[in-house]
Amino acid sequence: MGYVAVKGGTQAIDASIERLTYERLKNEEIIEIETIMATMKSLIDQIMSESSLYSPYLAALAIKQAEGSMEEAVFLMRAHRSTLPRLYYSQAVESETMLVERRISASFKDIPGGQILGATKDYTHRLLDFQLLEEDRAENEAWLALYQKASEAVKASDTVAYFPKVVDYLREEGLFENYKPDNTAPVDITKQSIAFPAPRSARLQVLTRGQTGAVTALGYASLRGYGQVHPTVGEVRVGSLPIYVAHPNEGEMDEEDAFYIGEIQVTEVESFVPVTKKNEANDQELEFEIGYGICYGQNETKAIAMSILDQCLEHPESSFPTHDEEFVLLHIDSVEATGFISHLKLPHYVTFQSKLDSIRNVKKGGHTDEN
Image 1 (spheres, one colour):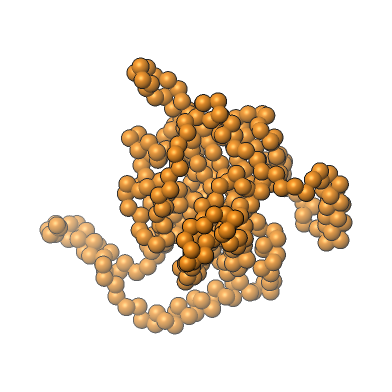
Image 2 (cartoon, one colour; image 1 turned 60 degrees about the vertical axis):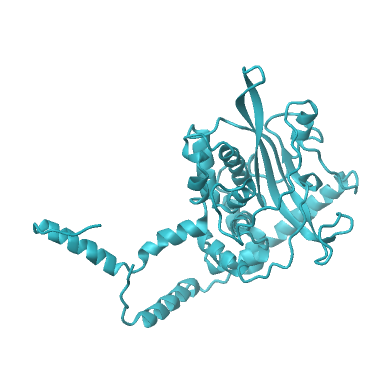
């Protein structure tokens, strides 16, 4: 593909960037990074997940720079991430060690350890709250003081409690198959291009980095009949996971010997999907398989949709597009999709002129040579 030079291009680009700055500053309002972090948590969580960079502060900066554009903010975060050195890989973490803030199951009312509603908009009225137009800082501080006082009063113990997995409870009954741990090193899709057929580790990475709307849309498409059958959410848990790394000269280390470097908030989902299989007697019987989803922050819809697509991609023999890993994995990436669509705004003068000349020749009754 060839392009022709645009005269005065540099000056025009500089003027465009100046105009962009003007549009941001003309109303003479400044939003602080701390304000974005305090008030736009859901947006920050989505951007961190899609960019594979866990940093609420940098995500807030990207939101400010991108003026609220999700795609642009993710692009900025990934570009910054590419400049960072990879000093070490963290050790695999078991989600049973999660410090749970929210834990629910749509499969059982009573689950081991109980359900924890936590912070969620699931039970709120979807009505505009006009009181937010006139918030008062003093009233907010008074409300926070009362809430914190009440929270201290109901604390039963300072002991850290871990919650068992719902699926483990079912495995004890023999309702779910037990699998041996697969300690194969995962593919790092940020270091090497994805190849098809892709291993599950690569698929899960692409899904968790996928654009939230795209992952949700394809998960919804599968639910409506363009893919797997309807799953039941076995467990949704939101909480903090500890991150450990080994000494660079020691290799893999036990958790008690490894170095704790911090924690991340994640949303984890395990969905139970009924499937029909043939038993040893060649009879059809119903079994359950698990779809898995996990992403940074609290983003439950995406994690649930991810668990649906994970299970779909485990069955590539289906003719539905949601079971085609190349179709799914190559079309949910926000940076790839936005970049390819946006490139249509770039000059295509030569190629379009060639097509235009061909059409003119045809209209005039001439002939064109095409390969």
